[in-house]
Amino acid sequence: MPIAAEIIATELSELIAELSQIQAEIRAYVQKFAEFAEQVDATRRPSVHNLLSYLALRRRDLRQLQPRLTRQGLSSLGRTESHVSFTLDAVLRALHALAGHSSAAIRDALPDEVDCESGPAILQRNAVALLGPGSTERSARIMVTMPSEAADDPAIILALLRNGMDCLRINCAHDGPPVWLRMIEHLRSAERALGKQCRICMDLAGPKLRTGPLEPTPGVLKLKPQRDASGRVVTPAKILFTTTALGVAKKSRPTLPVRAAPWWSELKPGDRLSLRDARDSRREFVVAAIDAQGVWVTTEKTCYLAEGTELYWQSPGHSNGEPPTQVAPLPPRAGEILLQPNDVLVLTRSLAPGRAATTGEPGGTATPAFIGCTLPEVFEQVRVGERIALDDGKFLGVLERVAGDSLQVRITQAPPAGAKLRSDKGINLPDSTLRVTPLTGKDREDLAFIVQQADMVAFSFASSAGDVRLLREQIERLGPRRPAIVLKIETRLGFEHLPAMLFEALRTPCCGVMIARGDLAVECGFERLAEIQEEILWICEAAHVPVIWATQVLEKLAQEGLPSRAEITDAAMSNRAECVMLNKGPQIVRAVQMLDNILRRMRAHHSKKSSMLRELQLAHGLSLE
Image (cartoon, rainbow, N blue to C red; front, side, top):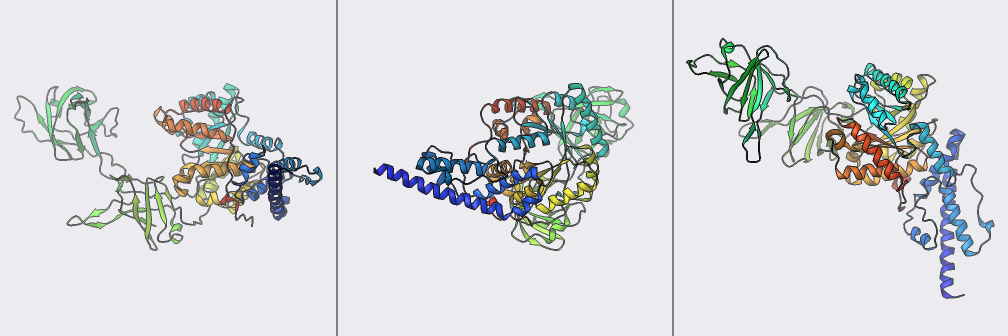
């Protein structure tokens, strides 16, 4: 035999042996969980077996094997997610044929094995069952989060449905059943008007860990004239002084309440009002006009006005010795804490209003800033040295001290000039193993509404198979209607336990997964988000479970009307999921239009993608107990 032929024969024999070993490992792994698979409905068993097969396959590092298969003109196993055993068998059959072996060497297929046509078909059927048929011109559906205004303005939902919305999302962390019901009624009216169908997804609020309230600060109104590039005033700042209206000052029409003075009714255009503002800077207003609403004044200098600021009347022909009037009380501003690197912040078990640090003499910190924490049970579950993130990762810190009622945090990362922490901002503890109730009292109350009205219930902060089982049992207690369960993967534990949670979710007739990339990035590290969302897509495709790609898709476009270039690329990549979620914003209709256009274009370029298969840590440690 020529040397080249010997090398090829040896290579084929080694590949056959290696793939046969993988095949045997897969069969053993599937057999290990055979008892569990039998507990799942027969229609779900092919998906259970395929997921087990994929997990067994990904327990190995296949990167050295893949190019060797490619050199033989065979599949590199890079697109095997939805039909694992079938692909391995096909490659083995080809290897045996190349080696001149008898077809008798090929094993029989497993009873519930899926092939390269039935695997993707199952995923497609599940996507239709969960998310609806969608558009015939794009593979991914579009889900849109409703703003509160949609309850009172049916035109919002009508416009969204007309421009491509396939699923309507209601976040139960906001508003309540009366508002949600009006949104749903508007959707039903829009469906009838347009002859379209739209699924409803409702998110349980879950045990969100957030910052508590802060002491309000005194109200201050800032007036600032418009200037050109040279600093010259183009448009003076303008404000309405009134002795009757005590409303909140608005940017579009600043209004400031003042206390009446004996001379107030004598003011006329051209008169001047002098003052020292809240910074003790000398300022002057010119009376521009007087009408039934009050006195309009202008200024060409930036000015800060607060309660008690004194205004003196300056008018030709008068002695100008009149007593001043004063700015009346202003609505207090929401509290905030300025944090910089190396600052100390104390989280308290109490939800008493927090406040910024106080400074002693001469310039030393007398007391550190403190703020409450909405889940007091975490105080017993964290350890010194563990990391903490605040406000979607704007601030990073480490726990320096853990006491019964407080956690002392050293801020390790923040904008160099500092940034402001406010109340009701998210707290993440990525190193901590937190055990909190997955269903709050509010969640249980909301479920009664969701089960009757929604097609999907999104399970926030799910982190174990037991959590999924608890939700499934709670839904079953509420009557015969069964909305689909969507697992929101937004914590490190949720990601690590995804396979086990999928097996529990596959006990239900219909389920899905949402990649909640905001919290997930904070929990697992921003640098890992790209690979984590890939792993979730692979695992879910192996289970034939539809995926919703969520958080900050075209966020800048929805908020400001103009997308960033990175957003466009991100939206294009989302085509590999079965659904893409947009958050609310003033320009949300434009965002839906652009996303619809992007997804239509990308459908012609790719469906899912091929991947290099390194060892997957997520494939280890499966426990269904």
